[in-house]
Length: 493
Image (cartoon, rainbow, N blue to C red; front, side):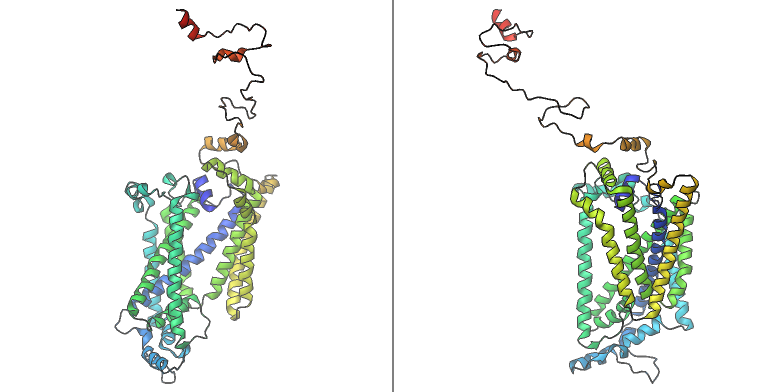
């Protein structure tokens, strides 16, 4: 839906021309994107720091060092020995758990200075990557040499000039989906194999957050596999590459959307402001990077809820039939009834998933994380409600309260002529067909063409075209045809 709306309007904005209520939802989505970018930046900084400490011959998580005498610690080698003797070790007593607490829960001066330094480097690098223009990253003439022979369309959120007109059914979308799913299955399989191998020797009874899984459980589990260094390099190098791409994409998306609202400010300044605010907001979370489950719950719940509201406004207020007509006008094909019915009930499905997240949050054992998720959800929906009330107030001031449910006449393609064609577009006229399969040369909708058949059989054996003027009984004299028989004239000569 978002892909088509961006392709149809040829711009990235809040969608207020489609419906005024979408502006508040878009600002709520910007807030979720901001939090997601901050969490990605923290994970990227932790991955860099963790990978640097893993380059030693003996990684820090596999040995016990510089620990008070009253703390029991079991190194990875001791875990293997006990595992061979069928002795299960608690994860709380392993060197990986203690190393995780030292890296991410310690508040000593050296640890804090290192965290702040790396997170600053991450946002500075993100500024330079996100500020690169699209034309510098994607050279159309070079990409066409690869994409044209294989029929892969040039799809891009911002590359509107060369985007394939069939993005919704393009080969590139299918290829991207298959590759994405295959890589997701590969990652899940690797993580599952490592986790199952670890549970054979270690008892895991802690609340497993994604951060703890990445930086405590998975490094320890690689010690039980051959070539564990390769696993470590693959996991964290892959994370770093993916997080850099995601962070740059989020920053670029937010900056371009904000630039559509504040056109007088250059994009480079908005990117710099977004990166600076992201760095400032990352500092408090950097102190407690391993304790962000509440934010994850709040982020997922708000994302699903805002997605349900956005789809409901588009499909119910704007109209699924009108949306389908836009697709038919712009792409040349009409969505089937299956897709239209699916789009109609999609807000209900998203609402159901959001309620499931709320149910999981209520059953969460850590009360502090529940309050964190509730606080984030409250801030998000407060911003959304304020923006929606502002849009309603503007309609009331204009004495046009019904305008809150209507789209602007400027909504649609950027060219005025295309918008006029869309307003005059009639899918009935677009799909009309004559049942007699004859050529229609006029603009009439109805088919008045009768089949060229004779009601009676003629007694004349001549196959000339003059037979179509035959009239009267067969024993009567035929009328003289006004059509000259060229064959008879030639015979007379």
